[in-house]
Length: 112
Length: 113
Image 1 (cartoon, each protein chain N blue to C red):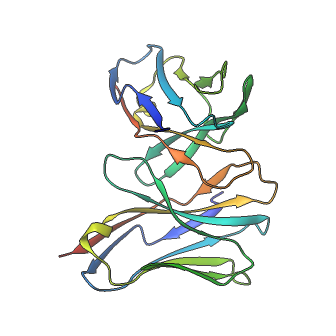
Image 2 (cartoon, rainbow over the protein chains, first blue to last red):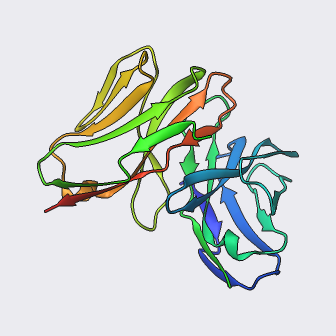
């Protein structure tokens, strides 16, 4: 079955370290998104991509980067992890021009 | 600037009761209004969605009511069950169909058995 997966599911890292969160989807969706979820803030868009080599900043992109080298993957990199980046991160994908986004199971990141 | 305002933050309802979650938006360019349901430890999943050309959409026990003039929409869960306990997000998307969805802050719903 087609799906969207995230790894790792849990990660603890230290302040200042570079961290990469993986997102992989097998639906061949053009669009992919990264969100962070924090209590009281809901889901906030970090970065998104409409296809290979396309990346765009969302509302909370500072300190994060993405790259899209193929259709299936959109890794999220925290260049220098900060305690403010402790959160649950969700990846999502959608078919271009369609409405529904499909979410992965999330990665809980703790920065100490 | 919060483009989609959701209330209440949390809600407790007795089993069999009606759960009501409200959302308001500001941008008249929005043309798609989904509700997502999220269980603990899981990612959000689309529950039901509506477009502004209709005032109501019903799927089983879940109904969206939409008031275009007031720029408000709400989710009603009839005969609420303990299995409905989850976090619910309303959302909106603009007409340019760039697929970005703007989410409300979420409502934690707890149904008492």
